[in-house]
Image (cartoon, rainbow, N blue to C red; front, side, top):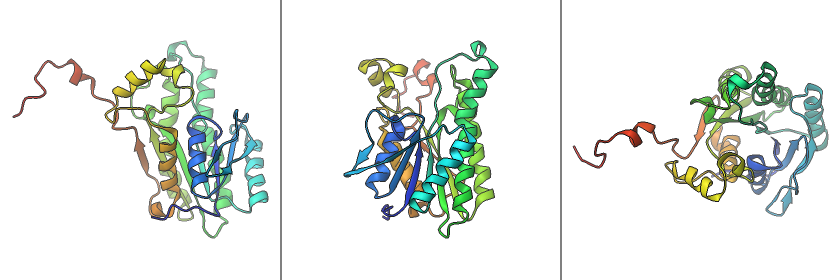
Length: 260
């Protein structure tokens, strides 16, 4: 299994905390040079295997900032092999209570910003003999109802559509795929699920019995970026622990243990 990315250069957006930090750590462990960008640095440097990710500030919604980021990476390291578009997110807000401006900001961050970063990365990767790989961090919110985060879910659905189109436009030099992520336990999980008991209760609703760890999402990204996925492009890798148990199973009063 060739998961040694020694000598490659990887950009992880939002790569200094939460899921992004987990992704950065996995690529560091695989030997890659990792550049983690965010608007603000994390509380601590992202380290793994005795190595540290390089931090560069960037607002991924800003066209000039993103172009400058990519140019700085190429000037410093000579190449850009992989981009993991992880930056994104949303607070809880019912659609009827949100302004058009709010919806625009959520869409900008979760769909248009990854597109912008990908365009700038593609500009470089198309000129490299070895091309490159782009991984979008999508969400199950784009594939099921997303009450309280409707614009976010719509943006993630749009992101998955972008992947299928860009994979055709940018082949064969650039492969582009997405990870459809379910619930992940991070340092901010309590904001969404409550205390440890609440987090455990939410995890129990998932067939695999728990929330994902950030590094597990990182391992999915590592696979998609690696030579093991050399023929994979335009694809969506679902990482949701089996998804959600259908509500009707809890409501039905039939003996589900009975055999036919």
